[in-house]
Amino acid sequence: MKTQAKASAPAKVILLGEHFVVHGEPAIVLAIDRRATVTVKMRSDQKIFIKSEDIGISGFFINDQFSPLKGGGEAERKLEPIYAVAREIIQKYHLKNGVNIEIESSIPIAAGLGSSAAVSVASAAALLSLFDLNKSKDDIFKIAFNAEKIIHGTPSGVDPAISTYGGILWYRKSQPIRRLDIDVDLPLIIGNTKKERSTGELVAKVNTLRRHYPSIIKKIIKAGGEIVKRSVKALREGDLKTLGELMNINHELLCAVGVSCEELENLVHAARNAGALGAKLTGAGGGGCMIALVSPEKIEDVAEAIDEAGGEVLITRKTDAGVTIER
Ligand code: PMV
Image 1 (cartoon, rainbow, N blue to C red):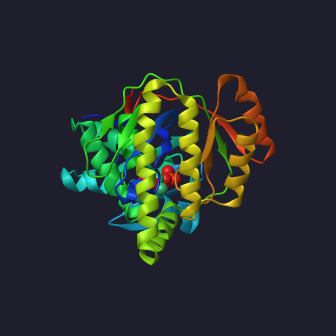
Image 2 (tube, rainbow, N blue to C red):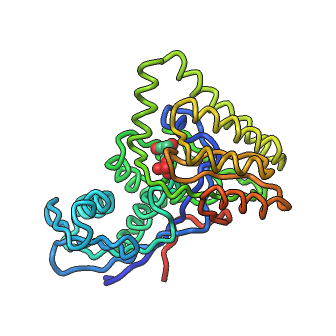
């Protein structure tokens, strides 16, 4: 029996289709080379200790009761999904030991880059490895998806899917996950507004709007799906100009359902004015990050424009490495 195991999982950007994916339309998402790494160690008692040095929180869960050590009341909310992963594995496989779970991450938090899903996926993989449970990526995805449901009631599952499988995915709720083997270099610049927000609240906002104006909002959601379908052709042909235009239209639809904000608009418009082929918010919106598609000769101009407009620029690359057991 092992005493320790380690796993990592990538962050993501949603290229097209966020929010509309919650309502059954497809999304295209890619894994990026920022990762969350989780180390787990066996305990002799039944406590579950979770610590994230990067954000300065830690605490114990014992029989669903939380005792914070660092980070106070905030700690429970932030650590709960990781506890949910551990509890599900321990209960499902009738395990007797508790665990120490330690998180390190280079993914900005609550910024639309899938940080919580990456941590859940890496935690699930590390725990399954620690207990010598030889499970598939599909099992890891399911466990992490269940944990996400605790954070916001109706997640689409796109975040844990991309963190598990890596690469570029076509994701549609309740349908088999499709990997898009597209060999296109996507020069994306990420701009972070550094404004934290809650995915759950933004998803709920769109739900409310849909309830109040069903015939209008359903058409917007459907149009979001059409954009994603059309983009596959552009991606396959390496037609970045069309892809950029589709990203711009997608952004305006996200504005229409109320999930953009002034800070995101500033960065999106700065990027477009500096020559980006397309720019849009990515993830839940309301703050967090935007992405700009740029031709190579414009990378510096667009990065500088985002920086001058108050955004934190992140240069990342697509990664094919989904969840990985680290030695
Ligand atoms: O939590 P974020 O910002 O990475 O966004 C998740 C994407 C949404 O479509 C807004 C929600 C979901 O569950 O798909």
